[in-house]
Amino acid sequence: MAERLTAHQLIGLVLDEGSWESWDVPPAYGPISEQYAADLLAARERSGVDEAVLTGEGRVRGRRVAVVVGEFSFLAGSIGRATADRLVAAIERATASGLPLLAAPVSGGTRMQEGTPAFVQMVRISEAVMAHKLAGLPYLVYLRNPTTGGVMASWGSLGHITVAEPGALVGFLGPRVYAALYGREFPEDVQTSENLYARGIIDAVVAPADLADIIDRAMRIMRPDPAALAGVPDPGEAPPVEVDTWEAVTRSRDPERPGVRRLLKYAASDVVPLNGTGQGETEPGLLIALVRFGDVPCVFLGQDRRGQADNHPLGPGALREARRGMRLASELRLPLLTVIDTQGAALSVTAENGGLAGEIARCLADLVTLDAPTLSLMLGEGNGGGALALLPADRVVAAQHAWLSPLPPEGASAIVHRDLDHAPEMARAQRVRAFDLHALGIVDRIVPEEPDAAVEPEAFCRRVGAVLAHELAGLIASGPGTPTDRARRYG
Image 1 (spheres, rainbow, N blue to C red):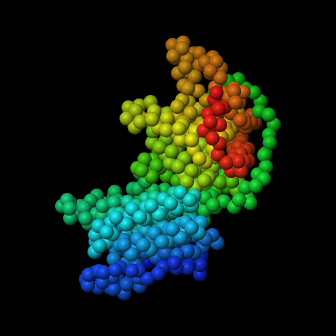
Image 2 (spheres, helix red, strand yellow):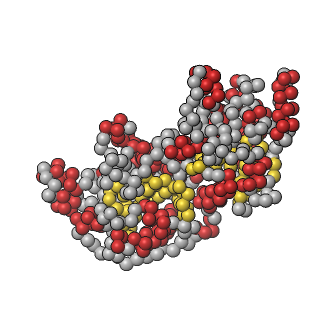
Image 3 (tube, rainbow, N blue to C red):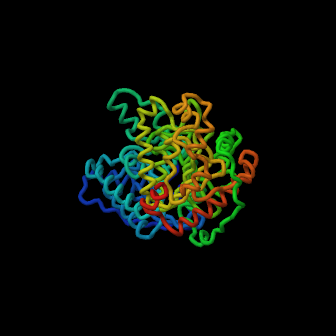
């Protein structure tokens, strides 16, 4: 673990040189004991600061941001009432000024010299953070070593994006307190940045020197330049050649067919990957990210066909990840792009115990009612409820060989004919292909494959990316549709 940076050192490392402007005023404590007054004086002399957080504003790559930074050398970064007053004032000022907020806590939690009156300040701080987010303003969190207790359980865990310092101690109950209470040591490999990342609780582990780059990239997506979104051209394309339904199904299953990762590689201008639900789940079958196609931003939810396997199909955790992305789009007032490409959701005891059916229902309900513009891309296979869960949108685009079915055609054949031989016939009868769905009004636009995405992956992905940029820009201009509008296409 590298030597802990002071608040001023982190500010100097992340913000543009000379851009820091402090918002702090001297703290007011009211009547306090002589011992506590002596503790505060010693903390000021030792740390060189007057409280456990510093607040202010600066610039990151030229962009104004508000900043709240913890200082561990001041009473272990603990939060008292005066500390909370400073934090709340800064958060409210950032909200009133329309500034993104960067929080970099480092703290052992509540200030024990003040007890419960300090402990309950976490409610005030959390309310201020949520008011900031409800105003559509980004809130980015950088967890430092250590971040524990009430700080981790309030403003440390409310970020739109949350990253942490390598090797940092991050968790709720401090290990020293645990050992004192229970007479045994807490396992060393649990309360670490790396473990939280592995479990889908934080989005990344980032060295301090790389933090400015992450903030800059995230801000370009979260706070786009409105002028850059005007007049994104429609790329146009020749009408796709109609193909037989079973040929489309067969082509969509080609292992060489590009999935979401190659789509982002060839078509996206910037990708900031996110990780998991933020609540202890992460699944490889879903990719969640902040993405730009050209200059057009979106929250991206893509079913990753490479991440889905026989031993790890798309499960309820992936849909809970998707619902995190839906909340992000709503809070950040960005369009949401969902990408459908799945052999189907998990059929297992684990999936049933994890509430798969309920998560499909909640995804459908969230998408139909989402107060953000929505675009769905049918990229390949579209099997069952796992595919349908990401379909409802203001606009639906489909690749030429994409399709959507309540079951794999082989499954439908087994139900109706008690064999697998009638799968092609069932696929045709069920009208699963993109051309049929376009005729029904479910799909708005088909992107041609010339003749097949598997043999022209880069050109195909770039063609799709140009369509997505145009469609997303149009949705940003028009705003989100109503639930009635979104449901009407299926009537």
